[in-house]
Length: 236
Length: 236
DNA sequence: AACGACAACTTGTATATACAAGTTTTATTT
DNA sequence: AAATAAAACTTGTATATACAAGTTGTCGTT
Image (cartoon, rainbow over all chains, first blue to last red; front, top):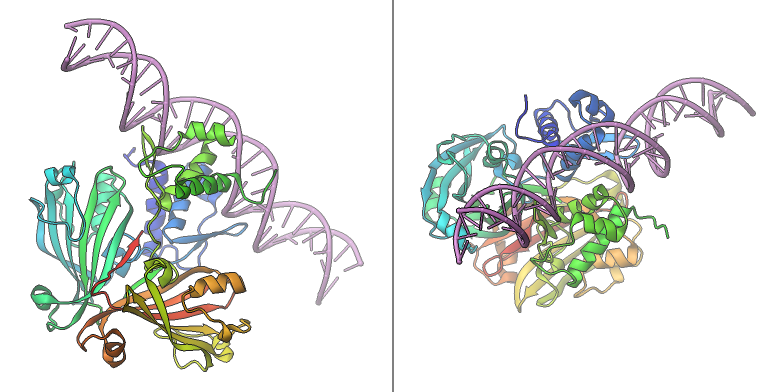
């Protein structure tokens, strides 16, 4: 009955899931902290730590004297400020097709970012995905992860799961921050085919360097997005 | 000896200031949590709450067994996550040219956002600016502000000042959050001229709805950005 | 000199408790 | 019936304590 996850994270995962799945809807009040204590059999500081996280990520807002108000599904955790595509779009309409399955490679580049010695030595888990919203190709992303103590990673199937969900649940690796560059560009030959657009079609490009809670493990990701029908949305 | 600020915020403010002023530099270790307890005469949970915040905002990173490592001054909380263009680029190279001086108008639209009755009745302060980085036009922005108790706003000169600085200092209006949509588009005739690019040139477009501390006062802004030479940069 | 065990650090998690401060509901008074 | 007061909630802050887990340096042995 004991997992590797600390209790406050378990509670966080449960509440987060419940919000995403609509057990609690926007505007609803979560059970009070004391009720949550009773439900999960932990003390209030532990509950509060879980709630703090949900507040930080924009899932809930708290009001003294009133309670924890559900803010809705994670607009604020969108692609612009955090983590991945899945949480930005919502899982419903998002289908993922793996173009290149996770495979070990040597680094050839990390987009516009520079790598450390250690990262270069470790080699690189490389993958490419094409993601469809409502049946149409909207995102194409290339991800590079240093091969540092992520056993069996290349054999994991995660067609429609979020890469970051897997890292969090299977490896206890959490995104703690990062940097990104955003620009508008044109498709190029590869994207032209993938998105089925003409060569001059404007495309959004994001180069991201994503730091994790595991020291030395930085994820590099490049995302191209056809924003003709679906603009990226985010809160701040 | 008692301020309105809770102790953990006081400690947070002090440490944050010290990092910004270079008392601690990038890579330095902060005093250990127990040392900080002694210094500030509080208990460890209080110190940890202050440190949690610094971690969240990217000032420090923590490593179990080692300590709290200063991550350096956070690079511009750029255009992607907060407020205006000025803070994103840095004031040095940014020159602003007013295309349309602040003037009262009726709302015709608010980009892709919907307006409330009250906002429509109030009318709209409208302005257009073109902003140059290193002498070249990079940003073109259109701003709409509901005309709600902002006396003499249309007569303010703010060539190179941040719009948000003026709102904060002259009207005590602070940005508390907002939402935005980002997409890639092509110039169009107007931008073609302003940016001096051809018609097919990809341009970044941001539609933003910015909430302020004054109830009912929401600022609507649309920013076009030529990212050919300058990509937008942001941390999260 | 090199290795290994251990002690002395560090941060991470969790409990138990207390009171302050804000909100809502209920009961009381006018 | 309406205004007021009190009670019963809610979250916010803070302390004191304990042990787990990761890192670093030291000492002793080989």
